[in-house]
Image (cartoon, rainbow, N blue to C red; front, side, top):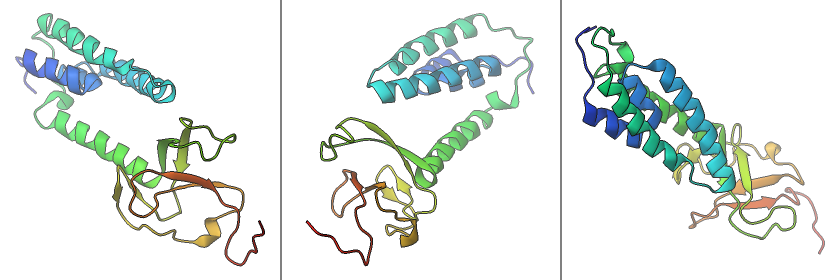
Amino acid sequence: MDNNWKPKIWVAIALGVILQAFTFLYLNRPKIFWVYFLLSCVVSIIDWKFQTFFSVVFSLICPIHALFVVKHFKHATKQGWYSTRWGLPVICATYFVSVFLFRSFLYEPFIFPSASMRPTISQGNHLVVKKLGFGTYGTYGMDLISSAVSSSNLMQRGKLYAFYPPHTDTPFVKRLMAIPGDKVAM
């Protein structure tokens, strides 16, 4: 690795605005990366839960901190593999692919869109939907594998299920009242 490497200010600021914590990998500061990464995860969860905008603060703090690090950069610092031309793009791609796959195949968060399940669930409540085993894998409006449930044995009376009805992009969350073979009286 190059000992005379010095990060570019414009790259550090751009990364600080767009990919907050990852700018510190570019700046060869992995410990600061982990601090910002964990803080941004906690703040993102708080923003999702309480509908706040604290994560915007990271878009302001990170570029300023990155600028400070570049201005006081020591040339004797050995460049880590994660701050090379190929290291940071590989790390960012791996991160985004893992988030996409996690949301597609394991768990996906939703904000409950309607008041149809009141008083059990109010409009705006937060739900985390378990997808593993159901065969309906996809996220961000894209179906990856199938749009049908893989096994009806997974369906249980009284449980809540999230699904997308045909021709709509708004998720429905309903309680399963009957399974095939049951008689329903109203």
